[in-house]
Amino acid sequence: MRTRLVTRLLRARLRQFPAVALLGPRQCGKTTLARALGGRYYDAEQPAERLRLDLDWQSLAAGRQLVIIDEAQTWPELFPRLRAAIDAQRRRQGRFLLLGSVSPALTHEVAESLAGRISRIEMTPFLLPELGAKSLARLWLDGGYPDGGVLRVGGFPVWQRDYLASMAQRDLPAWGLPARPQVTDRLLHMLAALHGQMWNASSIGKSLGLSYHTVNGYLDHLEGAYLIRRLAPWSGNIVKRLAKSPKVYLRDSGLLHALLRLESRTELLRHPAAGASWEGFAIEQILSTLAAHGIDTQANVLRTSDGYEIDLLLAFGATRVALEMKLSANVSGQDLARLERAADLVRAEHRYIVCQTASPAADATRGVLTIEAAIDRLLRIGKKRAA
Image (cartoon, rainbow, N blue to C red; front, side):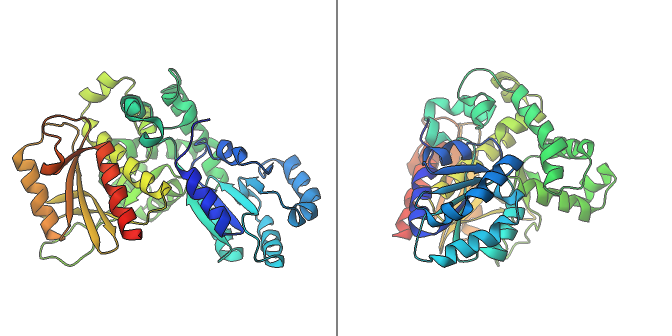
């Protein structure tokens, strides 16, 4: 089994808390990682497993083994039991590991029953630091799902299309999304076409024959299932007028390319969406890698009325980092100057352009980095602040 970045953070939190919730999309590897830790495993989605857990509960609560409960959000009756077991031996840590594929439901139960007793960690499909720089091209095209093609030839894009169909027809409705599967499918294709653009709920709603309130509610469900990422607009005080809408991205590039019917690197690079795809891919790699290291940061997007833009504005406490994503390594002086002016607006101490490949222009002294170098630089900034 390949080592996952989040493993060290997960082990640390199990030493610090009685319970840990490991959250992330279906099929990203949560169960594989959890079972590698040892302990007793139960799948709460299966009635027979619920019965087994029910019958074993007293011995589990009194025992010393880690108890792993998969898809815990599907069994709300579990959470009062967890609270009682934890409170009976409050000083014992690392007793329960809960796995969940949908954030809102599990978070609600945690807030109701386990506040102060549990730590939440997010896990994603595979990331570039887990696979190595040689996997960059395949990871970008296929996405990071273990069974979706990134670990072996084959899978993409058939696996991704089956995955999205299963989410639309079964999982999302089971988790509370009221949309018909055909509507969810249309919405996902629209989101792929608008990947990396400012969110306009009224326009999307009009196309689907829905109100903007309804469309925003659907987007909440997709975000809670870890399918999309919303980057909120920066709302600081500067002299220029700021855009107030978030940007929306498909979190996994393989799902995006399957929706856009881009099945090869050649097709991807020829497509008008290639730049936006790279932007979303780089943002996801950066934010998910920071999160896997336990580094807390605020992430925003900035766009002014006169066209200045920062693709990713990170705040590590009072330290700000402005990042512009550019597919080509052919970075001009004008590109750098434009980033400098935008970064000056928000007083960013660090500003970088993140390219796909190294070239003579990809020079850290000029503020141009490959994605691997950008991740390394941001990790150092985040760890320095934490220290």
